[in-house]
Length: 297
Image 1 (cartoon, rainbow, N blue to C red):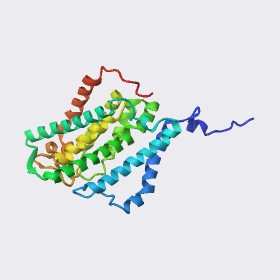
Image 2: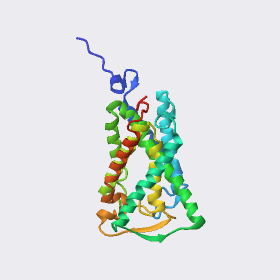
Image 3: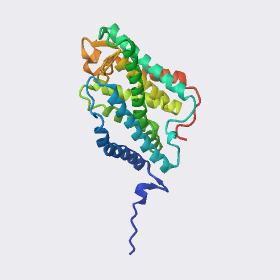
Image 4: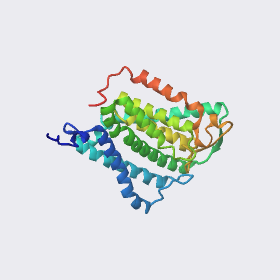
């Protein structure tokens, strides 16, 4: 009787290629490993934990660090696949137009929600908190910061890993899974609510829809940054429970937290539920009949 030789090769490889699940795990491992390896150095320079109101200087360092980590992890995986590091959502034409239109949509979407909350008495305006040169300084600093937030979070969850999982389980299964992860990453925030987490999931799916249509992350990064900037800086409301330093306007929630969002902010309000659906319909009307390249080249 002859014994068959056992090989682990089929467990890790599909032909000569690493299986998609191991690639995704390696990408996550690189992100976590790089963060743990560099955290002591960064922690010796700035405070790693957020304080309230959150000042812009340490936040800019933290987000620059996050962007560098995800870039390095993506670069390593791109080398393994013999692709450009920019091929996971950062190629294609109309880059600035997509980013700028995303910023505009993010600002308008958040402003629409704020307007509805103000109209039904769930949000009260208390005046101007910052003015003059100080307002410009903080406005520019927070615009830069939230652009970095958009780049880091979209690259981590809808860049390489979305591309890789989509090749294995399909685009929308991977989009759903990663949108759940996107929401869960906000669950450790004390002031975050269940409605806020559902809003994060829905926005994650909207970002994936923009990737499906445009085949790039520029619109999603723009929307992400425009939404956060409007919420945190311009209107001065909590963003997942966090207030920032130097916001422009002063507001406070009023009445039932189900409508006002309470300490979570506008994302924790029932009034935000129709917004992702309206955005999805608008994207279908605007992009649905246009011809774009394949999702997975």
